[in-house]
Amino acid sequence: MEKIKSFQVDHTKFGVGMYISRIDGDIATYDLRMVKPNGGVYLSSPSMHTIEHLLATYVRNSRFGANIVYAGPMGCRTGFYLLVRGMEHEDAISLARDALKFISQYNDKIPGQSEEECGNYLEHDLESARRDVLPLLERLENYTVKMLDYNV
Ligand code: ZN
Image 1 (spheres, rainbow, N blue to C red):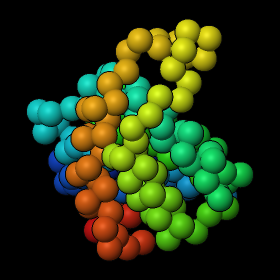
Image 2: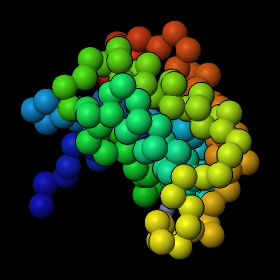
Image 3: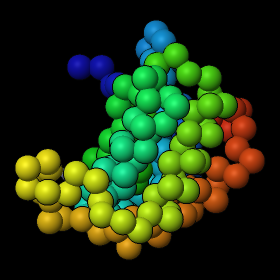
């Protein structure tokens, strides 16, 4: 089988940031890298789980809710995928920034955290989630569309 596009990116060449993983028609897949790949420090599963619930809730309730295809965790635990349809890159950066800010300040019941709504509702960690989004949030200050390119 052929090597898929996301495995063709040299993971030693980038750090925390937001990048375009691929474009399929009008759907853009962004990588939200929250820690450096192979940096020895990874997001914990409970933290990622909480970020996932809050990220998905935020983006789907935003003014771009109808443009959201999917938001979910990377198996390598270095970040998240954000798939959108028909959105400008500038707006996707703003949306990611707003979502991370929302998560960093969130101090309420985690949405969807019940046995009926979630597959592992006890495995959450809001405190870590709030802290883990900070490096990327800081990185996205003054972020430009050009910086979305993995090859820059
Ligand atoms: Zn869940």
